[in-house]
Image 1 (tube, one colour):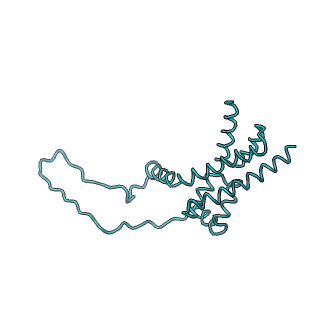
Image 2 (cartoon, rainbow, N blue to C red):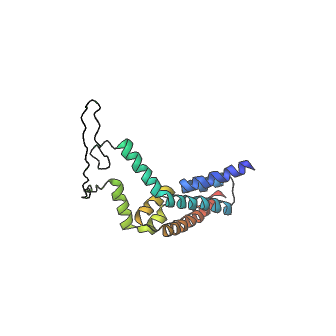
Image 3 (cartoon, rainbow, N blue to C red):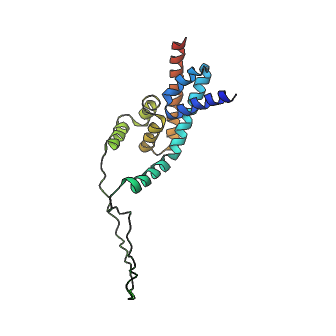
Length: 181
């Protein structure tokens, strides 16, 4: 019983991360045609839902890690400096703070390779193209993350990606089933 649960969990987890690997694993475990479609679809769709709803948190976490550990720029506007009290001076000093109400000047956006690729995918294929390419060419997390950068409608992302996962699940399972016999 526990080995069966472990096998099912493995197929679902792999399908949620790298969808194309779920079908061969399922057939290696000797699951039936319908079980393979079910488990790979459940894994792929749950991966899409999780990444769709947690992509903002993942991005925020990455930005924090990047700014604290990877960014050595000391001129960043997010770093604030405050006066330091000199304990060796016996003078009474009145410190006054003046706040500047002018907005910070935004840095000019730099187009990296990653940004260019996302823009190219968006212009050339749109959400539908990204959804169709995600299960086989991209991984579920990367494709869903790109989709969240293309469009802000989470329900639409989940719908398109789920349909794509179901279609690819049936197609891949059928292909593997034909060549298995």
